[in-house]
Each structure stands twice: as structure tokens, then as C-alpha cells.
Amino acid sequence: MQLHSPQPRLPSRLCGLLGLWLALLLAAVIVGHAPEAAAKTTTSKKSAGGKKKKASKKQGKKKAAAPSPVVPLSREVDGPTGVTSGGDLEDEEGEEDEGDGEDTDGGDPMSELEAIEREILAQPIEPGPLLVELPPVVSDPTPIDNTPRWVKHTLLPGEKLEDVATRYGVDKQRLARWNNLTVDKPALRSGKQLRVHAVNPPPQRERIEHVVKRGEDWDEVAKEYGVKADALRTWNRKLGTTLTSKEKVVLWREPPALAASSAGLATKLATIRVPAGGVSIGKPSRGRLVRGVELPDRPDLYTRRKPEESWGSSHAITQLMAAIVRFRHDTGFRRSIVIGGISRARGGRFRPHKSHQSGRDIDIRMPLTAAAEGKKHVTANDIDWKATWQLMHAFIAAGETEYIFLDHSLQKRIYKAARESGVSKEQLAAWIQWPLKKPKHQVVRHVKGHKVHFHVRVRCADHEKHCVTTR
Image (cartoon, rainbow, N blue to C red; front, side, top):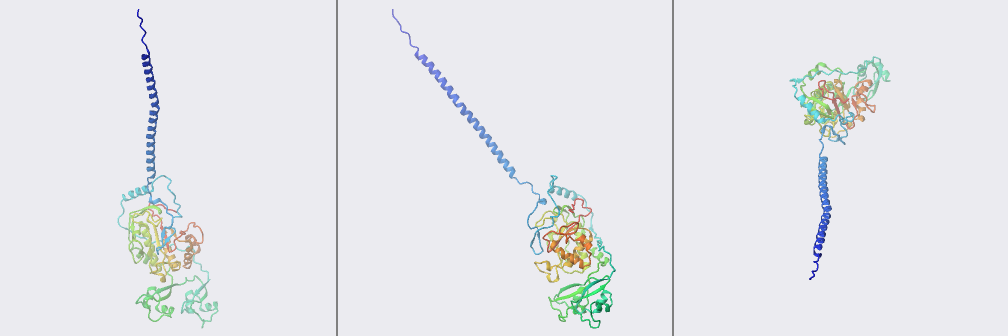
């Protein structure tokens, strides 16, 4: 019997073990790669999210960098904001007293002004120009005092004792006695002061220096100022019989009567024609001018410094022309009056001004003395302060002036000129800020920088319902 040895099972087992090992190896590989894939997926998601966030941040930066809408009417400006007649920059232009703050109602001032402008433009206007009425005279409320009082009279060249007595309505003998003079030979000289005890004494005469033009003679100069040619020669004995060009002729004339001919003034005012429809809206420092009216070219009344900036409301232009006509009529002033900036045709902001946006702010160069006429750069000593006060008073007398801005350092000169013109202290306390440091209710008030021109702000007219008063 043949014995068979059993077949070995090692290869099959080996195959099984090998298969199991391969399966485990494959599982390990799969398990090993899964975190990497997850990590890659997470990383890719993070990177994608980061890109989105970066993109959103960039978009945010772009949005943040976009400029906000500019509202020119409400922005503030530091530094000089006015120009003198000589071209020098000023410090202020008259807005510090208004107290304008930022709008708190959340509205857009520019849009609101444009809406009001469209509304007004849609309304019809009455045809024809405005007729100027005679402004009422604001006189000194202090009653005339009939009590005699002592005054001083300064003698003019060639003036005699009887001339002074006649002027003040006193006896010549008494006049000599009051001044320790001999009636027959009083020994008078030009510039000497005499004491006079008079009732309602007349104001002192106005001293004027006239620069002779080529071809002028004594009679022509005398006729121009309403004085006698003989008196003119007496006052200027040092000059020859024939006048020479550019010579200075000194003369004195009576101040104009406070109650000037109303008929003559009314006739002159009747020649003024101002187009209707020019309306001021908003504040002087945040406003607009609708249907702006150009200040007419009137060389007989004034000179426009910049015609493109000589636009205003119908009411403001009317008040300006009426005041200058009144000033010329009452004073006989013949030298130049220069009108500076008012507004542009549609108002709004224009440099260097901070106000002048609504057509009712007016810059006027103060009248100059005859010797200073034609000077490019002027100082306070070149200003005719009496004429300046008379021009200011022409605006105040009409009752339509809200403010007149003048540097406080110069208001004393205006005050003195007004007192010399016969205005009472009580009335000036209501009109001029000086000597107070801060204004109360006065019309003439301090805004620094106004040293060679003053700034007039006309009130809103009754029909200007969208015009804002800053008082």
C-alpha cells in the first residue's frame, strides 16, 4: 500500500494573508489621503472665502473712498474772505454774527434751494419795472433846545466880527465883549476861535479841498460848490488871479439842510427803473438769487467795480440806487462812489466772499477826500468820513437796512462825523455799536476787515417769503 503525503496549504494561506495585507494597505492609503483631501478642501474653501472677504473689503474701500455730495452753499472757509478796493485781502466778510450752523433736519440745502427756485420760476411776474417811493426821513428825535449855550466858532480867512455876529444872531458888541476884543479893531486872524452865546447855533461849515482841472477858473469852481467867487479868492489869497491845473483851492460851504427839497429828490428817484421779479431766497451765507437783476450802469451815480458780480434782488437794487440818489441830492457830493461785490446772476457762493449769496449784500468803498481821488491803495486818513457817514445815513434813513458792517477801530470816526452833522447821542446809540465792544441792536456793527469799504445788508422784502433774516 502506497502512502501519499498531504499537499501543503502554505501558498493558499500566503495568498490569503497577502490579500488581507493588500486590503489593509489600501484602507490605510485611503484613510491617509482622506485628511489631506479634507484639508485641501477646507483650505480651498478658506482661500475662496478669504478672496471673497478681500474682494468685499476692496469694494468697501472703494465705497468709502467715493466722495460725498458737495454742497457749495454750506461749506465753511478759513482765512481771508474779502478784498479791499486796492486788491488786498481782508479777514472777514460779515458772517460771524449770523450763527449759521450745519443743518440738523437731514435735508440737502442745495436741493431745497433748487426746489424753491423752480417753484418761483414757475410763477408769473408782474410786467414793468418797480417804482421807487421816497424813503421816509429818520430825523433826530431830540427836540430843538431853545436855551442859549456857549459854542466855539473858528474864523475863516477874511471873516469879520459883524459876519460872525450875523451868522449866530447876536449883537456885535456882546460878541466883542465875550472875547475881550475891541469892536473897531478886533485883530481877527484866520483859525482863531471865538466864544459865542447863541440859541440853536448853525452847524460848522464844511471845509473842502478842490483840485483844479485844466482850464478851470475862479467862477467855474465857485459855481460848482455854490459859493461866491469873491469869497473863494479871499480864502485863497496866496493863489494868483489865474488858476493852474492841479492847484488846491480851499473853500468852506454851508452843510446841506436836513430837510432837502423833497420835490427835487422825488423827481430824481422817479428816474430809477428796476426790473421786477428778482427774489432773494435762503440766508446771505447759504442762499440763492432767482431772476437776478443787474445793477444798471449809471456813471452819474456810481462805478461798478465788477459788473459780473453786480446782481441782486429787485428790492436790494432799488434800495441801493435810492440811497445813492438821496446821498448825491442831499450832500452835493460829486466824487466817485465805487460799488464792489453784490452777487452773481443766480447767487450762490463765489470767492472770496462768504456771504453775498442771496443778492442783498452790497460792498461800497468809502468816499475818499479830493486829495486821495485816484489812489490805488488807500488808508483811513484818505477817507472822507463826513461823506461816509452821510452815505450810511442814506441807507439807514430808508428803514430797509438790516446791518452795516464796519471795523470797530473805525467806528469812532463815523460817530464823530455824525455828531458834527448834528445827530444826537441818543440816536447814535441806536445806530452805531461804538463805543460798545459787542453790539446789541445797532445797525452799524463790527466785522473785522472792513476798513476801506463798508458792507450793507438789505432786509428781506415783504413778498420774499423764502428769504431768511439773520437778525
